[in-house]
Image (cartoon, rainbow, N blue to C red):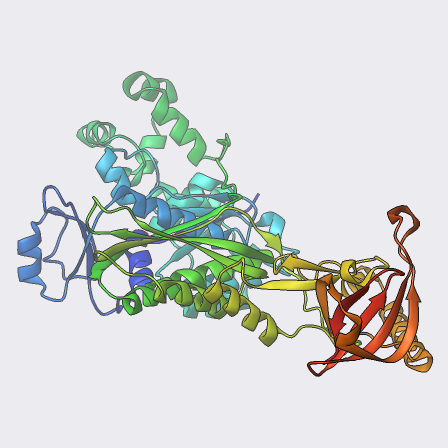
Length: 525
């Protein structure tokens, strides 16, 4: 296997820069809300260090952006990182964050290093060079700093990415294009020579073990490996022996790979209180942009989106909105447009401090119904209009019409929700046709059928009543007809004789006589 290890120094803080659109020139820091001390800092002067009080840090650096640390911030970062890294490999090992390990007191893992198994992806990307270049370009596009290493064993790759990186910038990646990526993969012997030069303090072991080694005069990994294994096991236990065995590539430790969730959830804690809807739309657009990228990469779309706004006043229940997308949307601008319509109708009873998006189910993306050989169908603009009307008026107020196979006119069409509209009837049958010629033949047959109706003098009104209405004989004057339509035999109804008539109040109507009474069926435009 070939492992790609990417080290993101202060990755959680870099992700907060991306979420809140913080300039790269401004330093950012996490602080503990209980002790009011700095937990992590990125981009600040050396005077601002971990452990300083918030007041002292602000006095030393006036431009410092302080973000209250919450444990879910690291989970959001690692989940986001794994989601877009999953496009480059199906075997993604989620990194452990340094700030989280400090809070838990865990120092037995290599921190902030993402692992990708890329040996199996060479043919997909036409070589590792293309994979590295695309990954580095996307990471740099997000504003992240990174360090990369290719190695044959995961632990080797992690340690080398932090302390002996091969690639640290896009310029370095471009300059290395002369030699193939396979030639740059650290073999086990070459990696060992690099690892032996590292200090013992760089190993992911307990601080007490490192202190005991240093007291014995062991300062490098090479000095540690030179000692007899039996003696090391007796003094330091099996954990250190297992670590050294992994470093030498003798055993492979099973990795816990990332598994994409069947649902989507994204939460953002705002750095400031938002009292107006316009202030909500800016961070919401960033969240929807990430959702759109997620859907586009997986060729998915959504029908419903749950948007939750958390108030600063914890006694107030959060504002929860269910946004409907009747035509399975995935584009950011369309997602935001309907969210805006729903939000403009709401009242904020307290400043908003957090936003959350939830998607419980997905559907496949479908191409537009207006196929290029048909020159027909519902355009994207019309679908957007229908979706806007439904968002303004409500789901129960906007319906779609679809044809049904039935002899009686009042039962030949159906009223359906927009989510189902266009999924049945003659137009849907075109999506099941496997060839363009079949679609052309269908349209030709429909045109011939319409022409035959015109030849026979058969006309249909543009507006049909849900149920025929009784009509007196003196209320209309027959102009054309009759045309007999027979209901199915199992309905035990009389045959109908249809006429085109002029109504006494004006307008052309479609009436019929069932042998007993006259009825109004519809109106011509």
